[in-house]
Length: 89
Image (cartoon, rainbow, N blue to C red; front, top):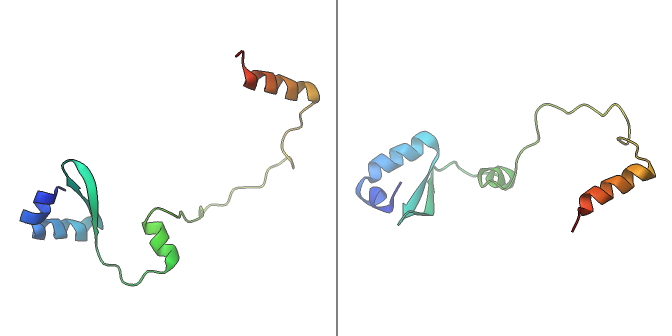
């Protein structure tokens, strides 16, 4: 949504905000403002999630690994991995 649209079609813009939750307003092609609908008093966690600074944990639990501690490496395997990481610079 452009700044001009917001100025000249405010009712339409607010209707879109009510429908989708928020609209980004641009000025000269650059995002400048975010217009969002009022949600009442959010707690800090809900506000952080809405702002994209927090993601709730997955609802499906990840099973425990079958082998505790992961794979076992021998010294020669570690040396090969390190040589591979170093490359040929």
